[in-house]
Length: 287
Image (tube, rainbow, N blue to C red):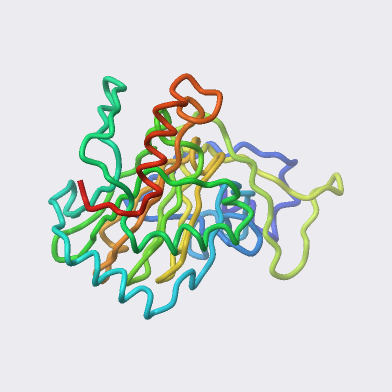
C-alpha cells in the first residue's frame, strides 16, 4: 500500500515502486498542490500522497500583477459592455476573430481589436522573460459567480489556432486551477523532505510510481495574479475550475497567441499578420 511508503517505512521497498492500487477522488478534490517557488507539485497533507512530490513544469505565476485601482477600473470598463451567456454558469466577452474550430476556418469577422484597457496589461507582460515575444491575438473575459454554479470542465485549449502560451489574469477573487492528465504514463514521485531525508537500502533516495490519471494538481491563483501555462502544463495537462473554488465573483481574462501555422514562416502567415494588426490596435469591443 502507498501508506507503507511513508518516511518511516520507505526503506522496506526498493525504488522505484509501482503504485498500482486504484484511488478514486471526488471531482474537484486535488491531491497535489503546485509550489511556484520550487516548481514542484507536492502531495497534500491529508491525501495518500502526503510527503511526496514531482516536478511540474510549464507554469509561471506572479502575484499582484496589477493594482487594486487598476483592477477596479478594468472591471468597471468590462461591465459597461454586455456579458453573453456561456456554458456551465459562466458569462463571457470575446475579443477575437471568428473561428470554426471543427472545420478549421477563420476570418476577422466583426473583430476590430483587443479592448483599449488591455494595452497597458500587454505592455506590462514584456517585463517577464517567459512572455518574450508574446503577441495576443485574442482575449476572452469569463465571469464566474457562485450563484450560477459557474465552473469550467477539464479541457485543453485548441492548438490549431492558438499558440503555446496561455496567459490568464485572475480578478476579483482567489480561485484554484485544477490540473488533470489522461495519459497512460506513470509519474515518478520523490520524497518531499520537511525533516530528515530518507534513504532506500541501496543508499539512493526512495521513489515510487503513480499513474498519471490518479494525480490532480491544484494551482492556487490569488486575486490579481497572472498565470502562464506552456509546455507540459499546456499540452499534457487539462485545466479546470470547479464550482467549489468559486467563492465570490471572479473574472478571468485570458490572452492567446497565434500558433506556428499563423506565425512567421507558417502556412497562414499573412492571415496571422492581418489578425495581429487588428488585435493590437486596441480599439475593440466584444464580438
